[in-house]
Each structure stands twice: as C-alpha cells, then as structure tokens.
Length: 336
Image 1 (tube, rainbow, N blue to C red):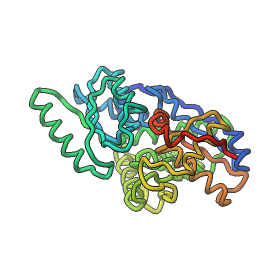
Image 2: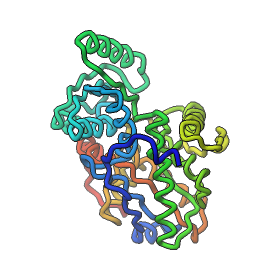
Image 3: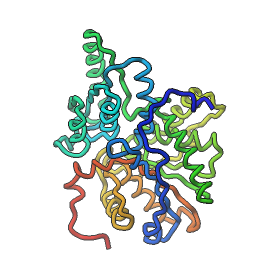
C-alpha cells in the first residue's frame, strides 16, 4: 500500500489503547462506550496531532528544513506538540499564535516555552487568519534572507500528509475491534479544522469499517467545515492513490454544541469533563473533547442510539488546556 511507503518519523507510541468506559456507560444507561486514547500518543502530554506530525515532520526533514513555523490559538494543542516534535528532532520551532482569552503562562502556552519554542502572540481570534498569514509570510522571507530553510505547517497540520495519520488510525481501530471481537456502529470525533475526521472517514470507507464516523463541531461554520472535510479526504485519497470519493453529504457533523465559539467552553462541556473524570478517571479538555462528549451525552439522552450499540469516542488530547481554563473548571458542587 502506498501509505506504508510515505516518509514517516516515529513520534507516537502506537497503537493507543481502546478502553471500555463501563461506569460512564452505566451512568448514561447505554449504549456501550469505548474511548480511543489518542491522548496517550506519547509525545509531550499526547494528542491526535502526533499521528499527523509523523508524516508532516518527515516531509520537513526531507526538504532539509532547519526551522518549523506553525500557528494556532494561544492554547493550541497542535502548536505545543509541534514544539515537542521539534525538540525530539533537533529542529527550531517558531509559533505564531492568536492571542485569545487564555494567554497567561499556563497550559499549552507554558509547555511551548518549556520546549524552547519561540512564541509570537498576534492580536485577534482564530477567524483572523489573514493577520497571522501575513505575519508568517514576513517571517519566512526574513529567515530565507538569512540562509535559513523554514517549513510552514498549516494550523492543525491540515494537509493531506497530516490526514494520512488518521487514515492509519481508522485501520488501527478496525484491527482492535477484531481483536476484541466487537462491532462498533459509531465513532465520535471532535471537528476543528476537520483533518482528523477526514482521515477517519477516508479510512473507514477504504477499509470497509463497520462504523459511521460522526463529528461534533467546536466552533466554526458547519457548511464550511463539512465541505473542507470532504475535500481534504478526497485530496488525501489522491495522495494515497485510493479509488475513493467522499461527498459533503457523507460528512455528518453536529454543530449544536459549540456554544459561543472556539475556545469558549459551554456549561454542558464542563459538566461532561467532570462526568468522565468522576466515572472513568480520564481528563477531557475544555476546547475540543469536552464539547464532543457533551454532544454524545445529549444525543444519548435524546435516544438517538440503541442501547445495544457500541460507540467509540476519540480522545484527541488537549489535556494541558484544563490548567489554562482553571477558572471555568473550578466548581464547588459534585454532579448530582
């Protein structure tokens, strides 16, 4: 398979565990829930971007890059893991980050500097892509004028190469289901840029997986994300020479759980984080997985699944974010 021939660096500890969440399942009254622990990918404090960076950083090495530039929010998991990957590979990393509400030296931002990355905060939110893009273009030009070889990684490693990481993850899940003699009807995943979901969708279709991939939008426009996810899946299929095509109607995304947008946790998100912590001892994050779990919980309460169904919840990481969001997470009463 062409996917196995692509340049790849070993950054992740794979396969990640597929763990049954028995107490969470019992609390919600079914269906049966498993958590795919991509928060345990091994690099830094784990997360889904590690799988993507294995391919993206290999490409940077192939092009003899000596400095990596990427972007994201001030508490970006992707930026933090890129900084960690740079340490492991001996490459300088520059992070151009949006200055949001959480720019104190805490969470991922604290880890960014701990990993030695150069951090530049740019005023604006994640919707202000043009501001950051202009900053990155000037930075690239300045570095090249000094004889450096910069390599720019898009936000979230949202490229066909990065998406390959989750095509492989879909295959990994299929193998784990076979080993456990299970059939899963649904895989739930957070949707930010859409690259992780694109890879899972492509992998599920190509490997004829038994499950339907469902996304929970955490802050961007549904129509845009639906189309960009399908487009990325198709671009990745071309890269891998897979005779597979996905249409926007093949992409199922719920956007009822985003609240006031990216990086702003909802009450239901905070409750979901606490529920999973208090039933399974697993920490979700307030930007991504907390919102996705709040969506799953609500859909279960609505009776959208059969009690006999099996659902896999993708834990895409982001755990350091809980420390930056300490005020939002600080509560006095336990969940009833």
